[in-house]
Image (cartoon, rainbow, N blue to C red; front, side, top):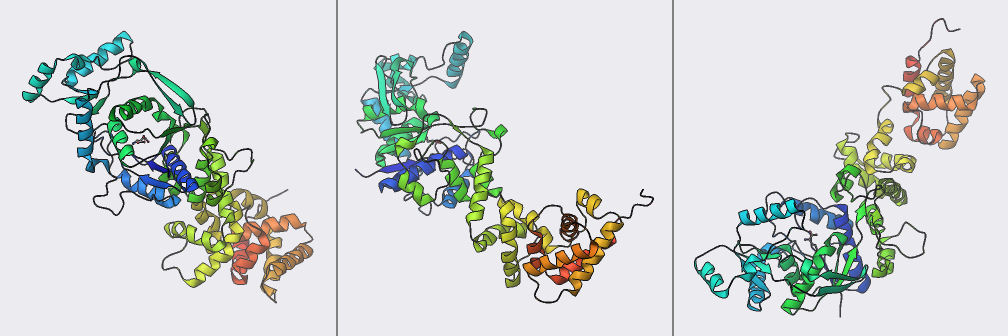
Length: 494
Ligand code: GLU
């Protein structure tokens, strides 16, 4: 039996990282097993409070950017067969079949009655659920209400006794008392299905062999199992992946930080890093103490046994660290290309990008990549390679651009650098700096700090000699002149 798994997002908002993790797990399992990965849009909940059709774009972007494009899905197909709102007749037929078999019944209760019932149950402190009034209607009453044109929903007739047991491949054997399961609405009076009916009909119709989804869907499983049994369908295997939580062990939400996948992309996280990070949220490769894996390595290692039961902590710091590792593993060319949109947006470079700019960036990036954790940091990190400092970091100005000694150091540096002949290389930049040390009789440290502050405006940054080499002679000398003019002389210094 070939494996077929699915990712079944609802367009209720831009996908949460936990939801995207589910997509990744499904994709990995399909790839590992040589099976198929499909995506189905579960868009039957049209409540304006939840329905967000604009989020479909983010669902597609998330899958595409991670490189886990489904083998079958709705994109570029019209009608696709993978969008539930196109498939209403299938759910209606299944609801009718359940009624005919006595496993479902029409419910004529009004919204007012149901609200009143719920409020009353809440005030008594008992679990809320349908009181099954319409289940007890006589066939004659049912016929009459229908012929009178009364609106009705279709409800699942949950067995009143017994238990529903299933084997979750992660959580083991799980048993639910049937009497505690609500007579769930399967079809609304509008003829649209609810999630439970649609998911079962489609997972069966689409030949899904394994349902891999978040643990929050675990309580839904017994209702779905009952539907499988009542409709005579063969059940898939059930796999629930643990919840993703914040460091406080509470479900990952807005108050922890960003939670939407696309937000991380906007913030300069790399899809490769997000893939690697999310896969480790609830899965491990065994006893290996490794954190960084290529996609191919994970495909090779991914098995359902690696999915853990305990909640996965989403550590933002670790994700940032991982992103930095990926940034450093990329070729300069790739990194420049990835950062280009951010540099354009920040106005560091302007379009069309000339070949000189690209070549210059190729020299600059190896110097700054070491410090970069997010692509969005690129403009600030490379800024001084494009613009002369217009101001100097406070600390640097106070320590290195104040007083006569500073003046002397910078003057000597101007002399040495403007007279430097020979090639403008890293080695020669160091030799020239040594010469300034000699001429001023000062320590090496203060000279380096003075030069760095003068040339970059900052007190920390990439290697000084490398920076001098990349900036070029004219630029370095000009900046030294600017710094000299900016030196503050403190009168009456003791
Ligand atoms: N449409 C559901 C969701 O939004 C699917 C749950 C499931 O995988 O069964 O996640």
